[in-house]
Length: 151
Image (tube, rainbow, N blue to C red; front, side, top):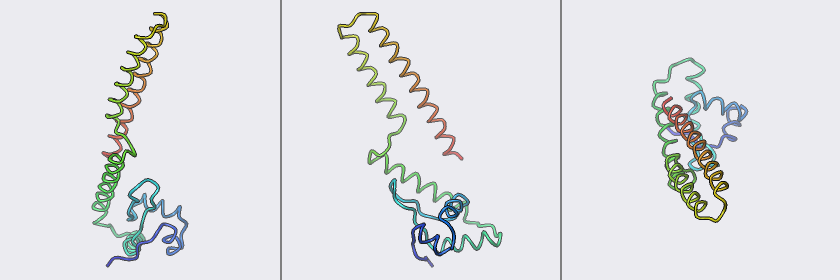
């Protein structure tokens, strides 16, 4: 039977623990519902949390822990998808396209302007170096994201 849905502050008062303890417990598998948008508070079903706490204290293995972890991962993926759809975040692959187009347009403007050839070449070289550095950073970020999502 579902319990009462409460905030972290309320749950901390119910459990007689500090909010920081609840954060630690979340990382250890305590069930919670992540806020849907950035800045939204997590929510806690008191019944689920108490069941988890009892299993934790008695050392019983929770056969649903894998299911809970999967549900948490699915909820996070849905939240991320919503943020992308709302323009709250941008995928690195899309950013690479935008960066490439921007740098191309910038190169065209520099080539067409009336500055001396040496200055144009220096600017174009600088843009190319910045673009390569940005691509390397984005590739590294993608690799880190792929590694963390597989864990």
